[in-house]
Amino acid sequence: MIGETSCILSPGDEIVIRLRLTCEAHDDALVGHLDRVALYACELATALQLDPADIAQLRIAAPLHDIGKVALPLELLNKPGRLTNSEMEIVKSHTTIGYRILGGSKWPVVQLAADIAHSHHENWDGSGYPRALAGEKIHRLARIVAIADVYDALRSPRTYKPAWTLEQAIEELKRQRGIKFDPLLLDTFLKILPNLPTAQPTDAKPNLPADPLQPISARISAQLLTKSADQ
Image (cartoon, rainbow, N blue to C red):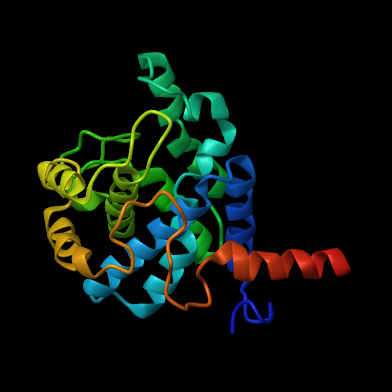
């Protein structure tokens, strides 16, 4: 099982896992969010009957969707209150920074992480950033992560807002149907939402199902770091 031996980890998988640790080191409050986004995204991908191999890569790559934020100051990311226009432009740059960190890899899982980091803030109607892509021009797995990311952000407390109720979050997701979100993907997510492993306010790490990649930081990366320390 992954987490018991590193011999079955590809170099690409290990790179992604170590980069995930970078995200956590920059902001340890992200740990639960990264796990939940990966979980929700994979549940949606499973409901859509995507290829199991793609889902396995998604589970590893999804937590790097915001890796570009490691280049941004925590004072800005955790600012209480509304961002100014100039501050918002800085925050938006995390998508292109993330792509510069990850893009061009020969390892498919790293390239998938790059595509997700670059495109998870693109909107179905073309109003998103950084490239104003629309519809199916947006990578499908990035569209999936976008739903998972927004849902968890709505349901989680932040320095600038309290956690939204389940009803409020669902209402907002529906309002963004066909605007921010792919209608088909959103409809499927809303169908499976009542059966997700966690569907309550997420102010702490969820009680995730048994899975060798959940949470990655607790099972895989700790083992990798222990091995490195012994060498």
